[in-house]
Length: 78
Image (cartoon, rainbow, N blue to C red; front, side):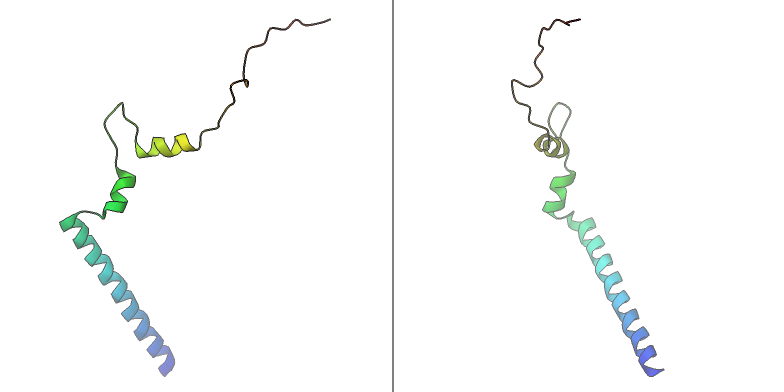
């Protein structure tokens, strides 16, 4: 019985620390703004310029060779 109560006690203390750190992080972000690393991923520019999302999509774009997809004249033989 004592071990179970001790486990519950430490579990509550752990949850208290996690809640405290979450509150402190929220206060820090409210006062000083989010860290610079997270700001870059959410940053968007004005219309006509590429956003960070477009750059990542462009890097995954399939590369097509110049001779691929050309129009070729052909005649159907019956």
